[in-house]
Length: 312
Image (tube, rainbow, N blue to C red):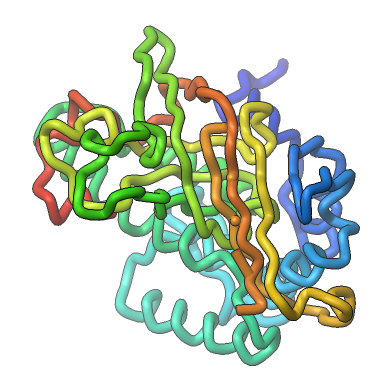
């Protein structure tokens, strides 16, 4: 008898088996049809582009280390009941936090660059406590949705990118006061099955190299900024996203000569940077986000948070 699929298994992220190592991770990025632009041209297959591949290699090292040293780079998760990559683990002890730091140091020694998964790891850990407190105060179900999403990512061993930084525009003004309302990501429509968001996210390290993007607020928000208080998960291959890579002076002529390199990205709900980091900007039209992928939404739980809690 067939088992009913979870909401996340029905998404466009078409992985049915967990990713085992760096090679399988690299292959999981192929054929996704992403709209990626670099140096004014659309990139056919990002995995094979010589300016993008070094950052993918650095990300692959996070998988290989978990195979080579599971004590260091994996942990037992009470959420999925299995041993998972430590970048997908919600810390449950002081030792977990110490091991996170040791793992990051080792990967720095191995790659000499950013391996792009730290913000995703911090996203899970910060949202885990914030959504719990929101639900306790408002009777919402954000914590349950987050745990389901974390379980999904742990079971398939996926990469999650945290999209926090907005372009901001006039930094003396809040989101709702900007001349261009899309300089911060916001809710533009509420539906029975979810919400529709649009805006921009910049400097998103490893965005194109990830499977999921989690959008979060970037600054303290006021009650009048309510539509900008949103946290939601979006699959990287969502057709509403466009990724615009930046460049740096040392990309040429030796852009294919490094094994590891850092790449960043900016994402508009229609969005990037590389120190050897690649800047990518994700841009696009408004994005529908299903209710089960929303971790916090304006006008509901997030309005009950203090400014410190909203600074995720």
